[in-house]
Length: 158
Image (cartoon, rainbow, N blue to C red; front, side, top):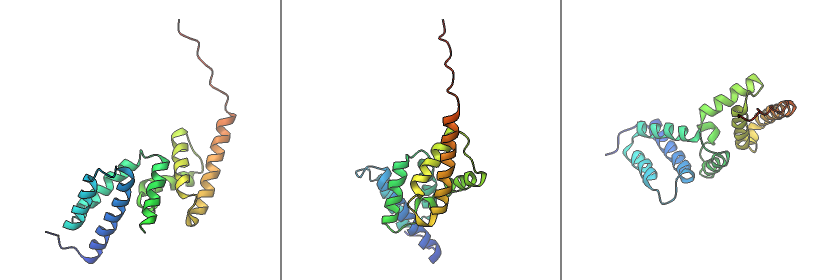
């Protein structure tokens, strides 16, 4: 039996269900219908709390997704008239904003994160300014890395 939800909560439930379906279409095999069935069941039952928990789980999964997977997911979301991935993944968006505010990349992990984010936002006209600033940070990091002297190799253990 479907739960009674306010119109606002019903809209949120349906929006999150569409977004999760788009993400699942990229992350899971077509014959793996378990996750898709869980989404459809939660939407049908009006289980907004369950859908929100699924969104949290999927966002955790996206932290280890490749830039190519994230780009494919973003394409699926846009094709289904959903919010872009950058708007859904607020944790990564906040992290990107901190990097842009600081104005430098510290280490390889931040460099690869920034590269992946640039892949997502470079073609979005509304994020052009961010993309230009991010490209500058990446170029600066690459230049710094190129000027560092190569690490000396240690002598072999005897």
